Length: 165
Image (cartoon, rainbow, N blue to C red; front, side):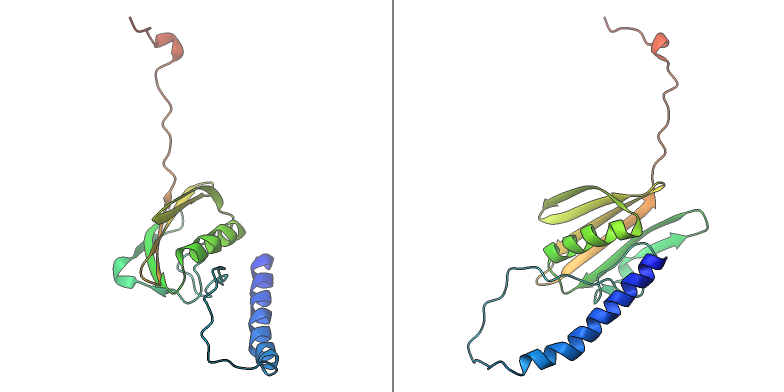
């Protein structure tokens, strides 16, 4: 819990720095009427303050798509499909989740990137799949969370198995 408070405090300090220091730095520059080329570097995203599930971060500025989402949570169970849309590239979104999910104790299982990006994370009892799709300058994020499936042990012992003929 202390880590989240420290992270929130750091985020507030960064925002205040940008608000108060960047205008001072811009005072000594000259303006130009020429268009500058867009940078190919990904700008990092910050987590939003309000989350549907406390341990699943969402990039700040992403809008929750209520009509395309559902969630159920009780004391011992939670499941949901949460959809968000926001102004960020798919690459920025992937970087965000790769950095942020481990901070909430999620372990990355794998990433599949081919057009749509899919990131798979897990905890002891849960799985979380994050799908990121580029939509014309925006990213649509779909988060699926559910309990892990329980593996059923085989009832047939090795001694009962018969060799193939």
